[in-house]
Length: 330
Image 1 (cartoon, rainbow, N blue to C red):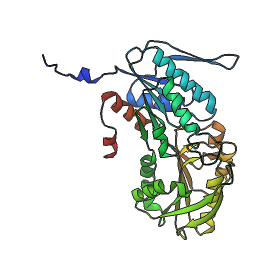
Image 2 (cartoon, rainbow, N blue to C red):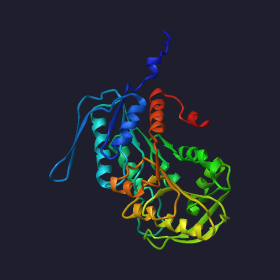
Image 3 (cartoon, helix red, strand yellow):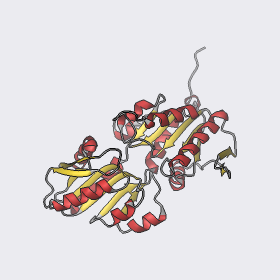
Image 4 (cartoon, one colour):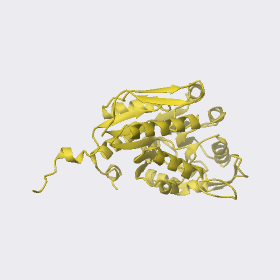
């Protein structure tokens, strides 16, 4: 007898169960609110010996589980918490486990660019898979080839359409705007961002010395004279690069300067450095939570756009077995 498939049959992995680590509680809550599904209970305990212990309040047997945990600072605490949570779901016989990682740590260590160095991004991907993830969801990887480090399927999303939509609302009041890619490695994504806004693009050529995260901005390729400038990058860490970029375009006659990035890492005194730049606005997302003291420094300049609706919709479509590409007309 031929089986007639019903809607229930399509739900192969059970109901959505959302779990949050401790790294990005506000984003996890916003994803929960978007989906109308409460975050499931769990205990995360740090023992005196600095070991982590995780216990679920209820069974996830046969369920479609999503573990939301960004891996920003403290990186090793947050990464280990993610790995332990994934293994907890696997050992409790979850039907499917998806690691939702808004920001993936070690994404700059993506190749052997000199002798005797590791490819730590590959190691992180291996650990996530071995810990128990069947799938992953992440945003704007620093290098596209990191997708190939995973042997499990995943959705690599981009927040740039959220950022570009916000900029488009401001374009009518801008003076002959131009997008500036913060470095040549970001040229392709920068070009796509400029194409979305229908504006020209310029590039900053820079070089790094050794392993030090102190680049030297060398050359501006393109024209910014008398124009409003939108400097774009995927992440801002120490703020050295963007500080040099802002000062360079201003020295070349730029008018108002806007700074745009997806991941606001803002390590050390980066927030103070950006706060002192001649910026009209710093536009970013909530893939990494901003500490209160950093927000206070930047509050007059910063705009934080939420990626929760994007991630929430992808979770819903993944659970229903629907295309994610349709969201972007792909």
